Length: 208
Image 1 (cartoon, rainbow, N blue to C red):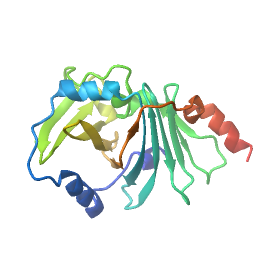
Image 2: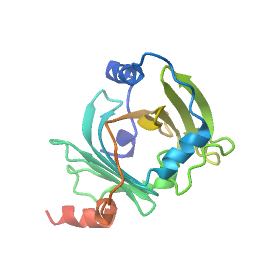
Image 3: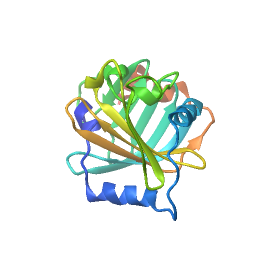
């Protein structure tokens, strides 16, 4: 699994059904403000959640997501998938158990995920949010790096009362997409540094 396969997905019926599940509510909610969404993301220090990822080749994978802001995330895929993606120390590493090569790495700043992992999320920054709309009982925003829109974008889907992140869609620099649907997030608590240590993970896998 390389960078593009991690960042890709397709508009599949499964994705549509998942979105409908999120939006199933008796009445539409008001659009959540960018100020409130920024506050929510800035307060999201650590979190753990089950996730479903929909890929552009039609495959669906599941696993566990760990977030430790700023700048750290870990995607552990459920067996038999042994792939692993870690962001830490300003880098993203994609571990492919089928390869004897070191993990593929690239700067976190070149991925749209860096927007929500930033030390200070400011969605009100000029030209960062290019779409902000209400859709049923969800608020959807699409954000990009104002200085480097060519890096791609991330669409974030939230529900209100209380504000919760439910899903994101990353569109990479080639236009391909990856959808990540989140289960219930368990916020707070301590997440070990080792979860986000790329060099340590590479060393462990090399020794196997």
